[in-house]
Amino acid sequence: MNSGRMLFAQLIDHLPRYEFRQCVERYHGDHRVRTFSCWDQFLCMAFAQLTFRESLRDIVACLQAADRRLYHMGIRGSVSRSTLADANESRDWRIYADFAQVLITEARRLYRTESLGLDLAHTVYALDSTTIDLCMTLFPWAHYKTTQHALKLHTLLDLRGNIPTFIRITPAQLHDVNVLDQLVPEAGAFYVMDRGYLDFARLYRWTQHGAFFVTRARKNFRFDRVESHPVDKRTGLQCDQTISLVWFYSARGYPAPLRRIRYRDPERHKKLVFLTNNFTLPALVIADLYRRRWQIELFFKWIKQHLRIKAFYGTSENAVKTQLWTAICSYLLVAIAKKRHNLEPNLYTILQVLSVSLFEKMPITRALSPLNLQITEGAPDNQLHLLDF
Image (cartoon, rainbow, N blue to C red; front, side, top):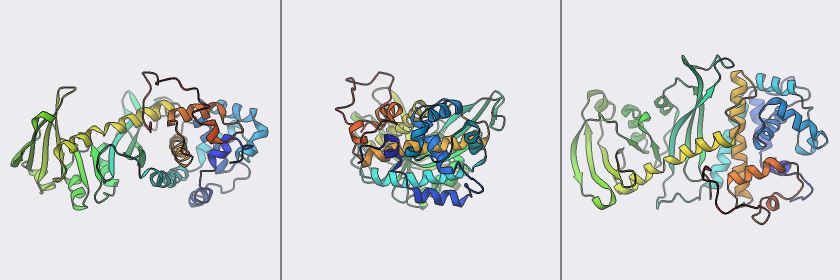
């Protein structure tokens, strides 16, 4: 690694330029653009995410203060507030959505050998959504409720490495269960989801494709018991049953048998009832799989705390989605760099160091080596430990 290059330049070396140009050409992003290209726009937005900039004025002020270094950062165009604002308003957000899919593919390849914490060879996904609140006055197009405007971020998270594999940004009023129609089930994989995705007709498609799901039953769930299996109640398991559905529409939507597992959480003393179409794994493993669904909740909390997706640089739908997708690209970029350089610090620490040292000229491995990081013993109590591997 060239020690004379800035950390920001070393970081963007991990971005596939050819694939980015393909995304730009697909949506004619640089059509009639003279100076400030889509690549320049993306680097400015990535810089904003990595350095926690709060506004367009903040971004431009920091970049103009380092005007002589912009060329070495990869930014060729002249940076101004109006130019960046116009780019966010007019250039198709799908450019960065497609580029995020390219980075997702690379990140999943790098993290595919990560430990799941279970003796399980299958791929395990967690599916959920989070609401991103928006100001009613500034974002009138994002209508949700009478007193709230918002968007929803639907995410399918690969629990090996906590890499998002499927992301959709939709109006907040879209019910979570509709996202199941956009997913292509992967044969042999496990999909862990909460009760909001309990639609038997849709879940039957998972069974037909050879995929497995783990979810929770609703309180008014009715069934016929077909067979009971022995369980060790000392582990917290209370029953393991093969059941059939009895309600007309449920039984018509899911005509095959299901597995019902009742488990009592020894820590919270809460009874949980799981439904799955997998009949081979031990019941305790199914319960443990659902417990790991909490990783997606931590993922949502993490990105809301450490990426700029709560305050926006523009008010149009295109500008908001551009910022969200460039934030996701920045997250994936840091995750890819961490794996390729075998960096020991977690993503939180890497982001904190990069936020104050992007203009430094030193090898990225030296800047982020444990010897150069004065990390106190233990993190603050309010810090999340997502991706601490």
